Length: 297
Image (cartoon, rainbow, N blue to C red):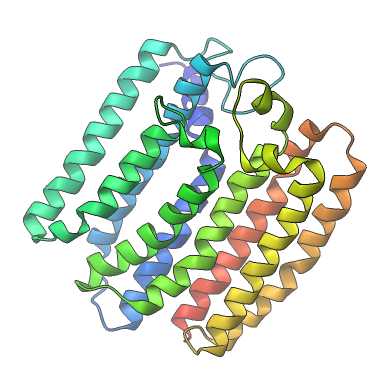
């Protein structure tokens, strides 16, 4: 495989967004260790392998099904655009999806069989179902404004609580509470990424939350979302679930203010795609602060 082909697959995987997967897994792991569980590095790496496979499959499935819906055609900037550029074929994408979904399914079933933890099967079912039917018919929940909801559930409770449960053998109220702001932040990444494609999404019937809200509503929604995130993090500190060190999350507010000042000045909201790094940075920094707050809690 030549360098162009490798680059195409690398871009199709959308590596900048893998941080969305790692933070909740790390949070669940660190909380489990804080509560007395052994480190079990190998098991944590196994959880990461499953999660990365499902995440990669989600990105490819999004490209695959959006291609047939026409959501990535024309002026749309959604997806990796590798199919449209002819760098990856439909057949190759279909084969990759088969390998990734079967591989992640048997990996999860194998672990639950060996560990006797079939109680975790709903977590596996939710993650794979959400991955496939985000854009796959007949459900296509991403086309009905539920993409952020499922992203928040998967990257929040499913990953944080699921990792903690695997590591300790039991659930945790604290893990569930910590998972909420993390899940909202990940949902926020998807929320922001849908803003530049509002017009093209609406033209193909993809009624995301931002399409339903319109420009003014989407802008207000972004502000509301981050107010909730900050309040939840501060609440976790007040409840002594996280160390007071998480108060430093407020230092990321200038990043949000910077983005909020940029948005009204941009006439063509498709240009906002290149400013998505602000949201990812806020997630990464606040996610790291939460993890530190767990370790020092």
